[in-house]
Amino acid sequence: MKSLFKVTLLATTMAVALNAPLAMAADTAPAQQAAPQAPKNANFKNDDQQSAYALGASLGRYMENSLKEQEKLGIALDKGQLIAGVQDAFAGKSKLSDQEIEQTLQAFETRVKGAAQAKMEKDAQENTAKGEAFATKFAKESGVKKTDSGLLYKVEKAGTGESPKDSDTVVVNYKGTLIDGTEFDNSYKRGEPLSFRLDGVIPGWTEGLKHVKKGGKIKLVIPPQLAYGKNGVPGIPANSTLVFDVELLDIKPAPKADANAQAPAAPTADGSKAQ
Image (cartoon, rainbow, N blue to C red):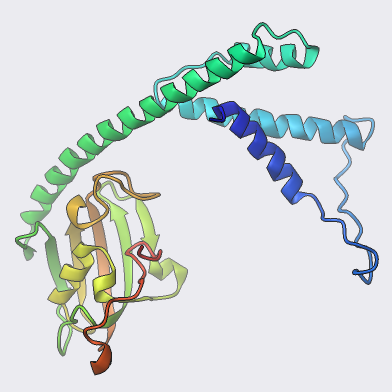
């Protein structure tokens, strides 16, 4: 198993290599492109000095951010010892043998994983409690209804015609937020409505959009079991209750021959593809 900091250093090295200009063979390129020039800085005697400093500064920033992430997990690494380790390694005077370094970093990686798991479980419990409190308060608002599944919704504009069916493709504009108002997705800001088959998204959407018709608007408060559950997704923590303001722009019935066909991969509520 690769240790955490070996992976970090490898990633940094790869990033530098991948961003370097690629050399083209003379017989395949009509003209050799000139390598981009770094801006000159009076603090350095030559390009090599400036490049070395830039690499060090980039690595230093990355490691500083890593330390801050560890602090969020309750692990407070000594910055002075980190810097001393780098200096001693360059000087060839490491206080630890290669084997000790490997064992120490493997143990540290285990600590980080354990702390991250504990924090995720704690956050999930807190999110559940906060979500339930939010839903209880929202349920008392005028016009709010609750389904047997636990979905809460408020129809702000009914729309006209028929409500969508599972096999229909719907076109919507929407805004999605956490219960504290943090916005994680917004089709209005993207300037492009989202189109998807109704049974290809999170259950809260599949159920909720059946309560409006074309041209309708609805507010959905979706409990975690009808959204992304205990795992969460990037931007949406585990066990999050989600709030969506959705405008149903259009409904496109599935062709009769395909009405009972298996649903293809469709965008989820956050605009990504369903697995």
